[in-house]
Image 1 (cartoon, one colour):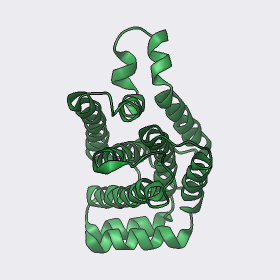
Image 2 (tube, helix red, strand yellow; image 1 turned 120 degrees about the vertical axis):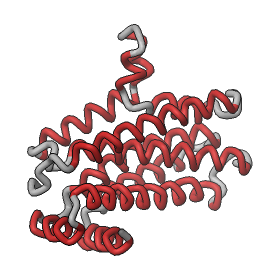
Image 3 (tube, one colour; image 1 turned 60 degrees about the horizontal axis):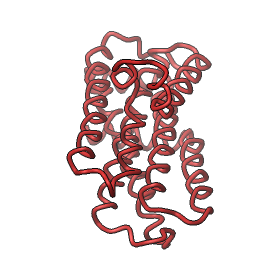
Image 4 (spheres, one colour; image 1 turned 45 degrees about the vertical axis):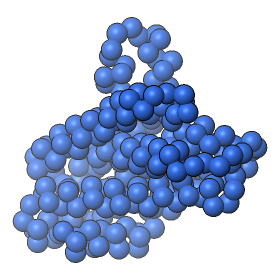
Length: 236
């Protein structure tokens, strides 16, 4: 598995398809911190949403960067489509964690916050960024070329999901019942928990984070169950 993930990372970096999503994350964060003042958790909540969007975009570009022949050779050598898919998920997880670490450390090291962040809030920020980054990457699993054949359809669906996820709080006022909270990716609950981390009890924070973690686990679990049935030869 280590050789597979190393191959995937090398292939993705050589393809340079990472440039768009990574550039988006960097530029969005730079713009955010160019405005003063910068409250600790409010700023981190905003950058976590930025990572969510960027990770979804990065996931889509990563999952579709290989040529069909390269993918087939890798799968034949592994002897399993699911092993290949697990490798892809591990690489996406690694990329998300690297970006997470950089995004959380950047404002602390450069002194952008109006007050000391503190270990507790930094740990919350790291966990919140990781969850939303993983969530964005997990959503992209279902929009790769082997699941959605047309680039325009995948981009449109991804954009709609991102918008609805971020605006879920307003949507829940329009649609009564638990449907919005259950069906939509829990971006808004994690974002609200991070913004109000100084006021909320630990149990409420953990509940929001556990909700996101369960959603991610369901997405990845169902994907791994179904991926062996899909035609991995489709690509852009």
